[in-house]
Image 1 (cartoon, rainbow, N blue to C red):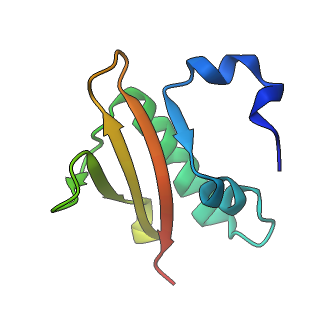
Image 2 (spheres, rainbow, N blue to C red):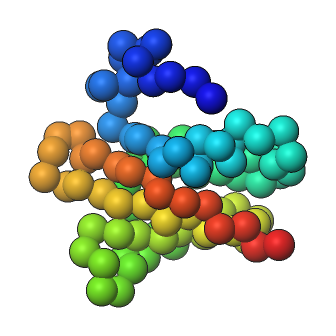
Amino acid sequence: MSDYNEFPDDEDDPITVSPAVEEFLGDPGTPADVFSAVVAFLVDLRENPFPHLSMPVPGRPGMHSSPLRRDLGLVEYAVNEGSAPPRIYVSRILRAD
């Protein structure tokens, strides 16, 4: 696992991933199609904190979920719209398999 303190520009990155998501992305056992779908989602998230098909999670203010491309799973994330740009915390990836 990498130490975020190694990368000084991370403080300016509006997207933070949870340790579980970091582990998921760094796991060599993560299928390539799922990995690429998650990376594509993160790219979309940089452009728009509410990508196509994103939905608020009922009863959890600020939380949203969005399907991965090709129906490979679901991403849950929180958006703090009170900052510019909005701060986003990607909390977990739920795989469809």
